[in-house]
Length: 495
Image (cartoon, rainbow, N blue to C red; front, side, top):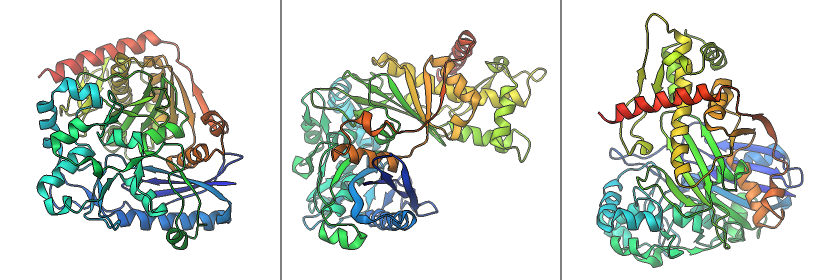
């Protein structure tokens, strides 16, 4: 019995085929092999043609089926992960009316800001758990005001994952998690955020109907079956945005658990069991994949722009040419905890929401030309990234999340022992490292939704844990280094 998962990203579409019994990924591929194009006809705009997602999905799926040699008839269910916060508009014939406005498009920022000011911060945060910001509702408001001829033709609006599900099944629906990520969900009323829709003058009938995250959301249509080579009638039984799905992929479902990634940018995603928000809106809160049925499960998302990109900049500009990341990690380990007083603020990749949208730039503090060398700088860069994570985790803890475990893929910055030990040391959390990806996670999510697995625990019982990092000795030294880093951050942001 096989489970098929798709991960619809803005760079590529990945497909993974998972053997339901063993939990093993039998084949995986992505397309295109170079980064997918983003249409940007004006500064700050970012659009993609949804047809491109579908075409890439077909190519990736065909590769997976050929690589595995599997029979399509053995596929029991399909799951979908997707880039969050996008806007797809279709007419009554299911035709796309304009290119999708994707997550990194910033044209709707003024709309969200005005809504936040007009409606009031307290009302927005208490009901949406976020500022309306640059999310899907604000993007739809932009279309209404600037492309009225398009808005008048809209039958339904969708998130990218909803669109892919529609292409697979012919049905248009979404989830509470999806509505919450678009700022369409009112957590106080436990229904559509009509107060925001009314503010923007949006018609609530444009929203798709709601289905549970883990449930049948349609079946592969005859047309899609012919196009993809799948059996007609295979159910789509799971969908979620990429960050909630990444947490699912890492077996993060319960309060106090954290999913983290540290690639070019970094993400800390924690699960909360109380409806709460950050008064300064420095993090985003959405319904997690297992929210509902009398159980509050909210995903609190922190995104840090300046993480792995600082490490790569250090490799290009600080260490000797040709030094590998592994060699850099060994170099960093030569310096003591706290880098002998050197601190790096890793915010050189644009404005940081965690810092209330300030663009402070990256800065180095406490450098002594007579005592410090490359090892101190390399370690301080890695520690600075960790301390930025800790700063965000402090915000989450202020919202009621008690961090006990951090789940992460063994990749990127988590390959560095200095990075891992510093994160465990400064948070006091146990770090568990896994080998998984979003498409494989979506496949297992489909298994839960189809009843192949009786629970999330059963679905992820076979998830391979590659390592465990316990908080190391020297917790006091990590705390001292973090306190110094915070003082320097406070001084920098006060300028």
